[in-house]
Figure 1: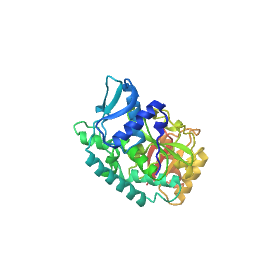
Figure 2: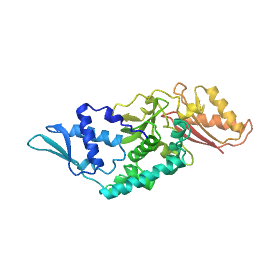
Figure 3: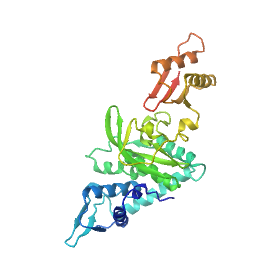
Figure 4: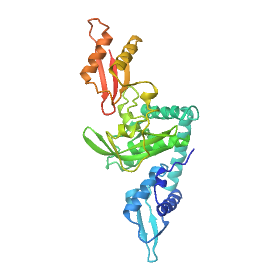
Length: 335
């Protein structure tokens, strides 16, 4: 297991000192936490430190950020007074359950075996098969559900969460097997609407990659989607914007489609692939068209696939398409 604190490293020395004191106090479930700062602690600095700490440490899931208060006495001593979602005893119980769940998953998914890429694929696939997005996880009429859906307990206890809980649980699992993983936050745009969102930046073989497991869960209906698995900044920035400075993700070496030779940069390459798959009796195709290759219209692609599948015969062929033109991926079923 590694201690992977990317955001801590982005703070200045005074902020790091506050981070440490705050972290230690929260881990001890203290009601009053003195911090090493003289004078007033600004809301902006507090929020920056709190955000860094909770993204670096998903096991701090039991603190209410919106209800944290701090005060400075006449001598300039400042202390933070956190509000906890759960009692000390409940946190201990949840921590034991989380530890057992992580250990069981590590064994089930054989996360001590294989390359980091293979481990990452197993974790990604488990989420896509087993974790559901909690569409009611933001309903303030159910506050307990809101808390669960935004932290790792929702994933490991209920296998249901929103993006923040999912991204933090991915970090816990990968860090447990020595893979660097950051929780990234910002905005994502879907159907013309921008919303606050969380995903991951994962280091594989010394190169960082953008990974949005939540969006791949959403696309994994009757299949496993890899649309947002190990992509570059350029690809993900078509739909996502970052709240903080992130490691630069420029490599596609360990992108799912590159690794599996499913990226095509010319029409002739794509036609050869479709022909080969159909000749081998496969009726489901999943591939990515590189950005340099002009995107095909859906009708044009469907016609191309149907023509190849018909094999020159005058028979009707139906083609189902699930395109993601933002990232250039296409899933096709022939029947």
